[in-house]
Image (cartoon, rainbow, N blue to C red; front, side, top):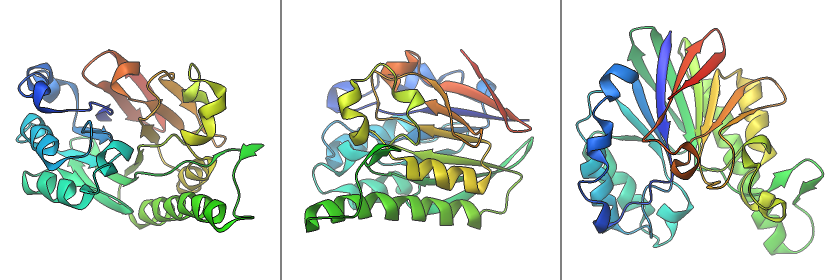
Length: 244
């Protein structure tokens, strides 16, 4: 059995310095790895990313992260990723990594993802150049996720995104903004890879538990949804049981 801890949307700034790390004291006993599902900063500045680095560095378990839309806001996402990597946090974007856990080799593939919507309520690559660019960005993100998942040589595979792959975990958000919170193309990539679990953030007023059409459990780990420092999910024969 492999146990995954995950949280997203911590939105750190200078006021958060020193406030989150004490909440991670039980991590070593709870999980084999910690996944960060994007929106790690409030405004995407390098100064905020330094707070993230200080709060999550040198933990007793490996940390794997994707960035979120807030982390791109100040056009410093490359610097943010480099800063996090410099303190030992693995940042993936269209890439995968394998973590050796007591219960086997865990493969984590991640992308930020992008908006698009879900079947019957989604954008398409048709019409104006702006609309085609919007939809193409989502398609290309899903393709990168699929390629990264397929590249993993691991016993258990997890997909890590910021945007949601399913509607289920958006319940509680206004339905009018569902197309801006996720993309069904991510779920298609996750199902094609036979992932054991998909985790995401972004939807602050959403719901924790969902599932893809192919039966892969999905967990919305945005901090406002969890209401706890991280969710814990046990992976055993494609099942996940959230614990608090």
